[in-house]
Length: 199
Image (tube, rainbow, N blue to C red; front, side, top):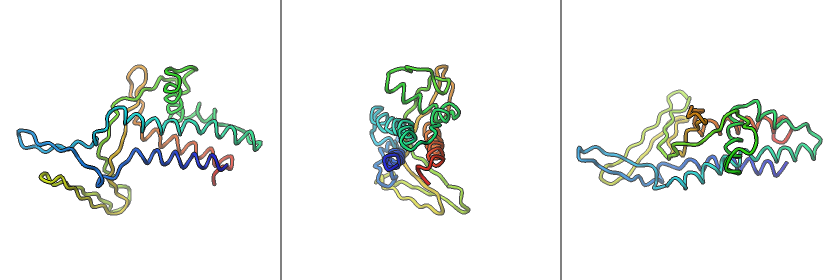
């Protein structure tokens, strides 16, 4: 049980690592010939840097299955991890991405019925006003100094977020990475609760 809980903490940490504090960022700013001010929030991260962060999350989520299976075997519990993968499209997509990355191709039948692929990996400014009443977020940048300031109320937030789109083999959009990963984590956590790993 301890190992699975440690893994969950690692998953949440890896997911959290897809976000950075806006105020710690050093935006690359440019002003074009028309006087428009542009800010690049990529923090000079290249495609490889983004992939390392993203696949850390994917691997951590997908490997819950094996840890849960081991827990169930040791504690005489019924293992339903495969049922979860086969019945939940977000969990299945993460599992397929993991297998493709691990084996360079799907070495077994696709669990999602698709061959998912990540595209448009980027780090961007993400503003959320949250759901609370009177929540707000305000962020400003001084075009001369690059100094930024932020003010939030309620459960609003502003972060630099690494995200990507996930498409299938026919280039159909399956969803965005952060939503699919968050849904997959929640689904695995529910399964862990069902067998008594977490409460």
